[in-house]
Amino acid sequence: MEFYENGNAPENNNNDDKNKTVNPDINRDGGVFAEKDYGEEAAKNAAVQPNAQPNYYQPYQQTVTGAAPAADNAYRQMYSGANPAPGYGYPAGAQQRNDAVQYAQSGTVNDGTQNNAVPPYGSAPSYGDNAQYGGGMPPYNYPPEVGAVPAPEGEKKKGSAVWVIIVMVIVLLMFTSVMLLLAFSHEGEGADSGVTVSDDVSDSPSGGVVVNINVEPKPVENDEFYQNKETGLLTPAGAANQVLPSIVNLYGYQGTILQPYNEASGIIISEDGYIITNAHAVEDVERFKAKLNDEREFEAKLIGSDTRTDLAVLKIEADDLVPAVIGSSSDMLQGEEVIAIGNAGGFNDTVTVGNVSYVDREIKSYTGYPIKCIQTDAALNFGNSGGALVNLYGQVIGVVVSKYSSTGSENIGFAISSDFAVPVIEDIIEKGYVTGRARIGIMYNFISPDTAEKMDVKPGLLVAEISEDCDVHNTELQVDDIITEIDGIQMITENSVKEFQNTHKAGETVTAKVYRLGFNGESEEFEITFRLEEQK
Image (cartoon, rainbow, N blue to C red):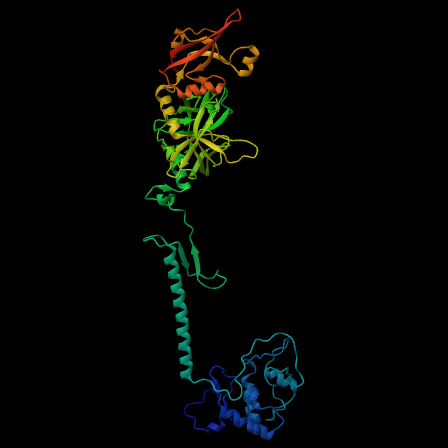
């Protein structure tokens, strides 16, 4: 039997095919294994040595009886010296040895039998009596089993084509997925893509496509601030965004400017710098500083205040001011959503959200006069005084004035209704005081019913002084007289006077009942009529 390098016989070789065998170890990739060759060789070996293993398991000896010396020498020359024998999958620790060393140590000569044959693949072999273990060997691709017939070239090409098609389909699906991701990430026409695909997949654990999603800031568009752009209804964020530039943080100082005496809030209502706030926030304050939403600071001047309504007006000299839009408080509905903005607890430009709890609630100002307010559950804190209560159309519909503080009570706050506040503010800006306020023209001390009973007199207003510039000075009224009633309103509590003042205006003529006690202990009662003066 003859051996050919690379597993191919010369084209002009005319020898009988039965005597041709290809050594698979010479060229495993290109080797041709014929079922016919293996079968014939196996029959021959079985006939000669019935107890030996078939030689087609032995890559080192593809010989038969009678051809030992020449074939074996050729084989040993092929794998000796510079041509080491190929590595096999020996048990863990087996050392690789070339055939020249193996044969030299064994001391045997291949006699054409299977006495010196290498054990079958995968077994725990020993080369003669000299098997050694130790050191790992590289893996070996075993030759095909007996009877295996490689696929013809045509079938191989057909299989390769199928795999190419499968790969192309997978690539197409991946490309389509990426395109869909890009399309859905930005629906707007002409929008910049927020997704980028990188060809460098070295850092990807899965070895797949790397997708970088860019997080973009919210677009600066008015649309995001609207719940309904057609009606102008804003979100709370939209309302805050619209009104914040009009909010002022106020700091009041007494004597030194190193430490504020108090802190409050204000609302810019005109481009020329008028600011509204609470009267109680400006009491006992000598100097004012206004800090705007854009961080600019200005000294503010007091224009006027009205303690009855707890409203005051300041003014700053500044450019590029953004005045707030004033809405009508009478348009508000119970349960409607509102926001409060102010210098809450010293934290400037604080925004809180709530609802209208009551539309036209009457409470007493800090001086005891009745004022009309919107009640809200929006969080209010120290420093919110003078700040804005805003509807979701971005309109100021109230000036924050106070919160109800009592054990067990929460979320009860009040803002002076805009419809009630606007006339007062206009008067203060135009005149420096509230026009039409009625004034009797006297100084008095109040005598309560309990005190009157002890003194054996009637309760009412004990006259201490009469103003000469008032019409009441022209009546019979004297110091130490007691006014018991004015225009049908009995003066039995201090609130009775405030009620009278709030229900009457300057210029009106009223009638009052007077009680007088003489030095002789005798008393008399009479009526006087006079015109009410304007309080300035």
